[in-house]
Image (cartoon, rainbow, N blue to C red; front, side, top):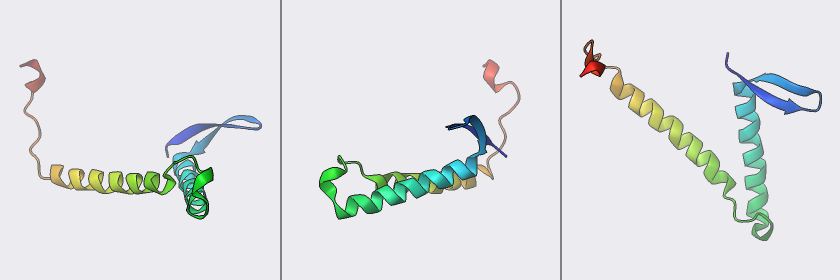
Length: 81
């Protein structure tokens, strides 16, 4: 549904966001596995922490969204006050 513009060899292409996200996770995993074997060449980047932060964000968004399901809608005109 949502598309991300990506620079490729042939120019700019609109790629589904889920594909870009999957590719990003894949790259983070590959770099994370490489950083386990040789820490002197990684420059101190915690690649697996990026994935952990992404998962934590997903969990927090779902937690906050669950709390809002039972919330009352704002009364009309609240912004004018």
